[in-house]
Amino acid sequence: ALELRGLPVALPRWLQHVGLNNFLDQDTFLLATQQPHVLRAELERRHSSSSTAPSSPFSAAAEDGTAPPAAREQLSLRRALYKYRSPTEKMLLEVGAFLDAATPRMPNRYRSPELLTAACPPRHVVLDRAAQHPRCERQTGHF
Image 1 (spheres, rainbow, N blue to C red):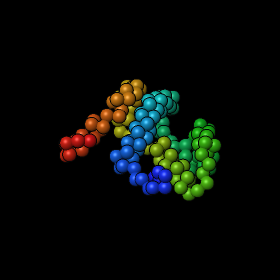
Image 2 (tube, rainbow, N blue to C red; image 1 turned 30 degrees about the vertical axis):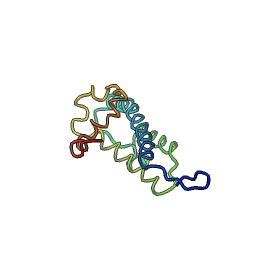
Image 3 (cartoon, one colour; image 1 turned 45 degrees about the vertical axis):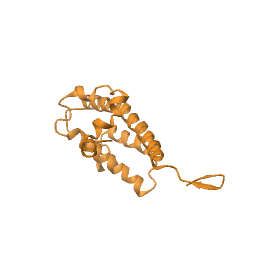
Image 4 (spheres, rainbow, N blue to C red; image 1 turned 120 degrees about the vertical axis):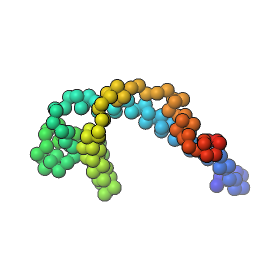
């Protein structure tokens, strides 16, 4: 609760939602603007890698030194960027290993490369709640 000259004043709930939605919109648009760069880098990595099945740089082979040098280098890079001190933070290493191994193996992932190189849609498209939540609109008649 907010205090104004010693009297407790409760912020209206709608005002709290406006602030929260503003934060979420900023985060959503940030992720949308970064997605084309990440997908383009993934596609370039796919084209530059050999035709063998992609291996995760975070697998046990990378840990014991039997992984290719590029995989060991990427493992070192992640360890340099993140300081894995707690079990929860160490879990990020495992999640990264899973995603690095699973994403390239998705069926039809690289069938339409133009989807991975598409530009970021404009802000009004990314933040269009009506398009993102059509079910809510049908059920309640409002957003």
